[in-house]
Image 1 (cartoon, rainbow, N blue to C red):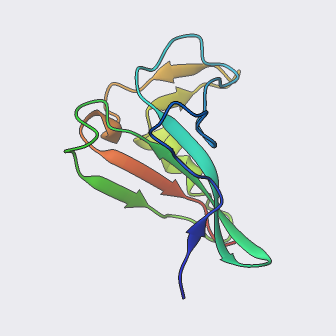
Image 2: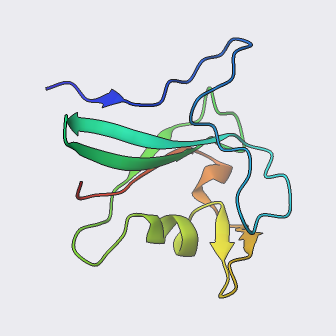
Length: 114
């Protein structure tokens, strides 16, 4: 079975669907591109993803797929509390993570189950 992204990423001058330009609580320019959307598993099931480009060399750096999740454990915990590009404080403010995996790699955070 083929998985399809419901977000298309174009390299032309067109507006890129799924690209994140603003985040609540983010008060600085992160200097890397990020995208979010859904992977269609079937017509009624979709997996949410958040992709962050490498802060190094996105076209040459490796790709990491992060998929912790399941009942009671969001895949976005790794994004917001462990190795994502931002830490989220108790008031919703985002600060840069100096140990983020996207310093050296492109990372897809995949939320699951659908």
